[in-house]
Image 1: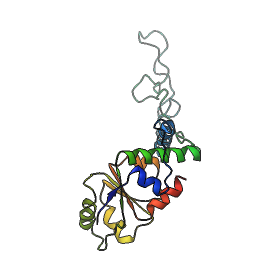
Image 2 (image 1 turned 180 degrees about the horizontal axis):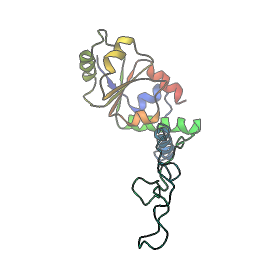
Image 3 (image 1 turned 135 degrees about the horizontal axis):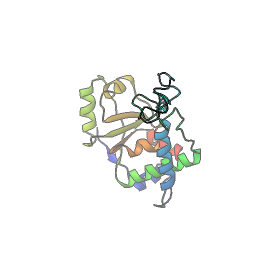
Image 4 (image 1 turned 30 degrees about the vertical axis):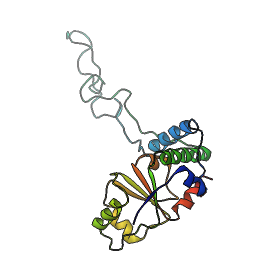
Length: 203
């Protein structure tokens, strides 16, 4: 089993719509990746204000005559165990990106990776015995990169099981790949008719 580096000419012959202007799509790519990362944030960080922390509302000592600074509550933010001022509250970090911007970002990312020689194509990628050792051996025959993204139209169960424990490798359907995936890996291995799926998505 061997892999061939996908060139710009070969990509055009495969009907992949590339971004030929090197300045086009950079802003779209940035906004899209930021949105993907923001959408993964849970936004559950929460602190308690002085109205929510446990503690008595009793005035601690007399306003005057003690020689101490005036103090009205043990729940004051300046006290240890008191409320937090302007702390984080639950919020929604998600961002909406138009489909045209996502599509442009995908084309920009794919074009950049092809220009860098990071996209490889192979006719077949299948692990019959379902063993991780066999998966690593097969993948090392295609590329010596540490972080590898393998794209296919679909994976059989044994292939998927053999590769799921390899932390530096991700198996992904070509229909689900996005711009961030393409940027996060050293090499991208495109299996069989996955190239046609990418061509349809960049049309």
